[in-house]
Length: 242
Image (tube, rainbow, N blue to C red; front, side, top):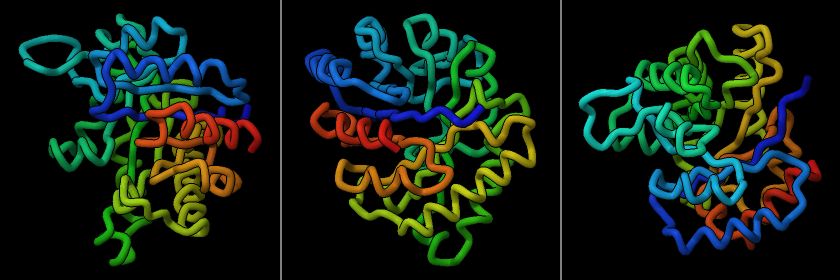
């Protein structure tokens, strides 16, 4: 089997119930790929009710307990989520999440029946120092649990310096990282060749087709451009045609 193509939208801390009208327009568009939206937790149940695959943006490593403000993977599943984003650079930066913490969360997600979208990526300083491949290799080794399979795990490469900045790595830079990720996953897991690899760094309608033509890019983790169907629609169409 080949990796499934996935257009995943990360709404981050944006959107209210009124914004769910955008989902109707997204659902009205034919898609030749899987489509997923990860809204703020307060919108998950209402969004899932519209019939679009829906995910969370984080979960706790524990199944329950005294963790005020946190959400368990089983709770996400209970309100309709099928996926959860883990280890996003904003979580790693803002909340000090380590590879070990991300791996524990991914394990919890798997146990709850969620697909874990595990994020990896280098900072600008790491890129400029020539450490990109070492950083990605270490994050894959530390963040992806041994129980990962092509069915329960997606990997998203997000160069931290490109998120929300409008900057995009060259095609060769993206290809180099995605080839490395495919090699590492194939060496470690029996079905590593089938794990979907997403690119996430300022994906827009204008550059989507070019990015999706790069080897081992099976889709995208899209930020701001996923908030409006007028922007996310062309990205979905480009992936469907890839």
